[in-house]
Image (cartoon, rainbow, N blue to C red; front, top):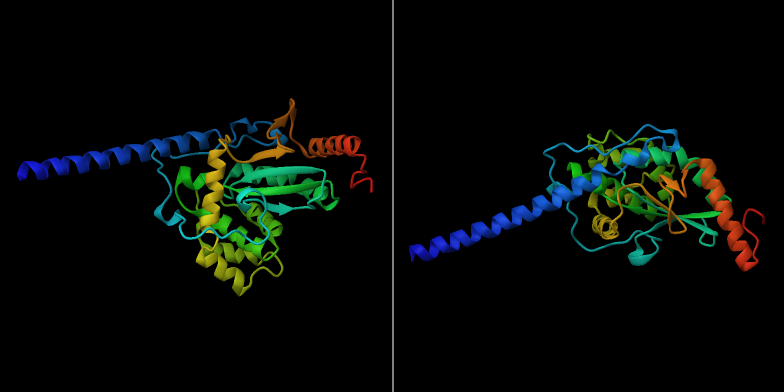
Length: 277
C-alpha cells in the first residue's frame, strides 16, 4: 500500500513538473515575441527606438488579468468574431487595420505621430480603420493594465466614444513598467476627458469587466495570426509598419499610399473617390 501511494505521489509530482515546464516555455515565448515588438522602430516616424523591456525574471499574466465568463462583444464591433472596433465610413476605398496594446510604448509613439493624419483621412471618407486590441505587455511583464484598458475602451465603444477614449488612453499612457492602467479608478478618471463618457453605465461596465472575455479572445486571435508585435499596421492587407516597399511610414506617406489605393480602385470601378466627390 505504501509503495502504491508513493507511486501515485510520484506521478502527481511528474504531472505538476510537466505542467510547470509547459508554462515556463509559454512565458519564454511570450517574452521573446515582446522583445522584438518594435526593434525596427529606429528612425521610423523620426522617433527614437522603442523596444519592449522585460525583466529577466518576468513571468506570465497575473491571476488578476485572467478573463473568464461569456464573450460579450462591444456594440458595433465588426469583422470575424466581432473583434474589430471601427472608425471611419464603411464605404471608404481603403482600410487600415491596427493591432494595439494600450501599455505598448511603440503603439503610443505610432498613435501620437499618426493620429491627426488618420483622423483627417477618416473624416474625409478616404479611409476606414479597424482597431484590434491585444494584451501582450500583460503577458510579458505581468500585470493587467492591457486587459483593463482594453475592456474600458470596449466600454467606450458601447457609448459610441471609442476613438476619443482610445486617443486619451494613448496620450496618458504610463511608463511600460508601471501598471497604472490596472486601476479601474484611473481608467474612469480618464473618461472624464471625453465629453459624455463618464457615466454610471460606463463605470459599471469598467468595474464589472463586461468585455474581459472578448478582450482575451481578441488577444488569442492576435497570437494565432503570428504577428511580430504591436503595433501591427496593415493598409488594405499589406504591412506598412515600420515601412512599405522600402518607404518609412510617415503622415505624408500614409496620405500618398491611401491616395494611390483610391486612384487604383477608381480605375477598376469607375467610381470617383470620396475626396474627389
